[in-house]
Structure formats: structure tokens, C-alpha cells
Length: 137
Image (cartoon, rainbow, N blue to C red; front, top):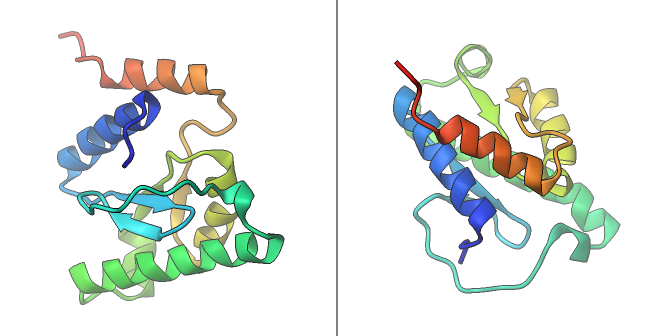
């Protein structure tokens, strides 16, 4: 479903970053919430702007809940202090997604990073291209 060039570059970036740390990465969907990166979904045409204001307000709460469920499943000994020490959430999604979601995640106690915050699409592509280039020796 997610096949655009910007998404493909974000996917490669996420794979590179998480592979180096043996971490997980997920996709946030306006319609479906939090998706595992290998999950197959039927095509849909919905974006955050399509939601009513109260649905947009609830969406980050749902995604945060789903994320905590994944973490609890994959890290059953996780508690709040473990989460605060070991979990950093890096959000590559656009402002309609990261704005409210990052506030909710920070309020829960997650450390959140948004490396492309405020960047236009062309700037994001340049950032990702540079990040994905092999490092000179």
C-alpha cells in the first residue's frame, strides 16, 4: 500500500537505523493506527485531515496504546522506568501525525525525536538521501 518515493526512503532509513540497533519500527496510519512494518493492508484513501476534530484528538491516544501493547508483548519485563531508560521513539511521519502523537508519547514518558520536523518534502528527501549514503572511510 505504501509505495511513494518518500515513504520508500523513510522505510530504508528506518530499516537501516533499527537494524543497527536490533530495534523495531512501525507504520502509523490515519485509518488503521499502528501497523507492524510487514503488515499487509487493503488500499484505502484516508488522511488525518479527513477526520473530524475529535477523531484527530483521539487518534494519538489509540496509537500510543497500541505501541505500549507491542512493547509489553516484545519486552514483558518492561515497566515505566525501563521504558524511560531504553525506548526512544523516532517519528518520520508528517506534521499531521507527529504533532499530537509526539505530545502524547512525551506525556507518557517516552523520549521522542522528530529528525525531519518542519521540513518540506524536498528537504526530507535530501535529508534521507544523505542519511542513506554510505559513510566515507
